[in-house]
Length: 135
Image (cartoon, rainbow, N blue to C red; front, side):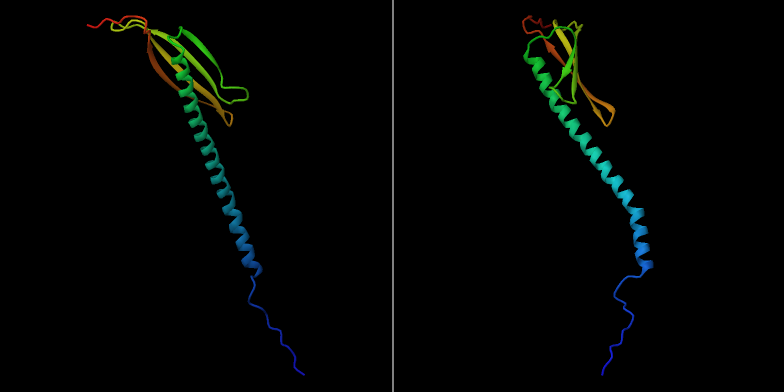
């Protein structure tokens, strides 16, 4: 009769190897999660900036299409539930070269994780009904 001899196996991991692996993973995973979280926040901020730029272009075109704007300030939202708001300020520009020139400043605002963000631009528009004199 033959007896099988059982020898200690060397195919598995020892407790010390598993413990070292878990310790390394515990040290590395929080750093990786922070990197992924930062990337996600930066991507959302980039998406919001791009959306704000498109909304700014849309709103400026709308203001210019309505003709020569009245002086003053106005503002509003871009639809119900939107995180974006707009504010415009129209001022007369005193110029010896041009009559009927106005400066339009447009600001788009939103919140990004509780912090207010905004972008602004300005443009000039002339009253086309006035005849300009050239020197």
